[in-house]
Image 1 (spheres, rainbow, N blue to C red):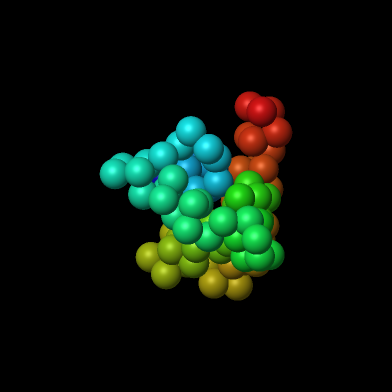
Image 2 (image 1 turned 90 degrees about the vertical axis):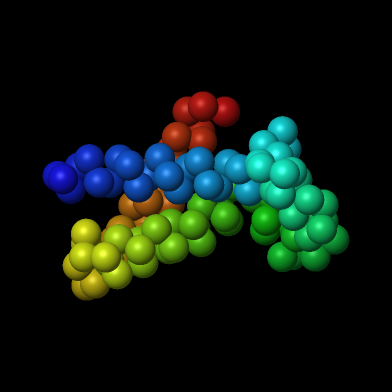
Length: 98
């Protein structure tokens, strides 16, 4: 698989996961994400962070970049680059779609 295709798939995955976690109306299976958003609330900075698309995409990008490196799809020395690229790609899609 080419690097460009891999990047596109990973960006789409980060976008989708981030949108499910943060957006009202995206309740998820068994209302899992809706319950999670209700549980964390918005009274603390952690709760507000879970409602922020940009914050969650930052951490989802890290998880995806770690996965890519761990399974040999990307080199470990490029982890920071993949991390930022995946998060930025998800943010770009969010801005265009919103």
